[in-house]
Structure formats: C-alpha cells, structure tokens
Image (cartoon, rainbow, N blue to C red):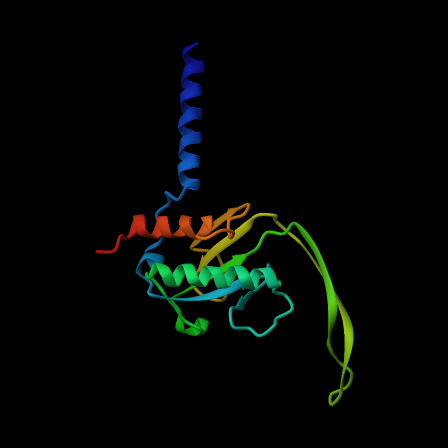
Length: 177
C-alpha cells in the first residue's frame, strides 16, 4: 500500500511539473533574454523563409496572416525590435502553422527557355503536425531552436497562446526593470 501511495505521489508531481512547463515555466537561454533585435520567418520544414521573402510558394497564405499577427504582438510587447533583414537580428522567431495534410495548386511562371517564360500548373502538398509551432533560433540557419512551443491553435487568437508562453518564459527569466 505504501509503495502504491509513493508511486501515486511521484506520478502526481510529474504531471503537475509537466503541466507547469507547458504553461510557460521554462527559463530561456541568456541569448534570448539579452537580445534586442529579432527577425521573423516561416519554418517550412527544411528551411527558414524570411518574412519579407516575396511570394515564396512554400509559404501558405494563412501562415503569412499568422506571422503578421505575431509581429503585432511582439511590437506591442516592446521587448524586442523587429528588423526586416535576418542579418540585422540577434534572434529569428519562426512560425509553422499546423495543417496535418494539405494540398494546393495553381498556376505559376515556369521557365521555357532562358529568354522566354510560360505559365504552367503547380501542385503542392504538405504533411506534418496539425499543431501550430513557434521557434526561436539564433540565426536563419535553423539548427536546434533556443526555444520552442507547439500546440493546437497555438497561433490563433489575440494574443496567441504560443506568444503568451514565450512572453511568460522570457519575462520570468529576465524581468525588465
């Protein structure tokens, strides 16, 4: 009976700890706490696409809307200055909208010869997590994120839950005077 109670206590503490960590109780690395300038990007799975990249076909329109909303949240927070070029930033904050499996298509310019173009049909598909994700990287080269959050509907709403989690973690680690 005592071993059962001990096991129940350990499981209870573990569950409470896991829930607290999900709620934004994680300290952030000093690099995130000390940064002042950030760039925004789209995480398309195998690369980061800068916010300002014009009409990159790998970026879905709803992700552009999500990133614009995140930009407004970051600017309203006032902790970081959002810069237009990743080379000017100390951090890159990237998003990836959850979508499970998505298919799309349309028309796009396609090379015919070196001096002439024609329009052709394009199709694309994507399979991945159905959960939204927010990542903080030290550069556009991706690597291991310094911070990451992932949850269903995490980039929806104002403020978005993932932004609120990042903000709570940063403010808890390095409160402003």
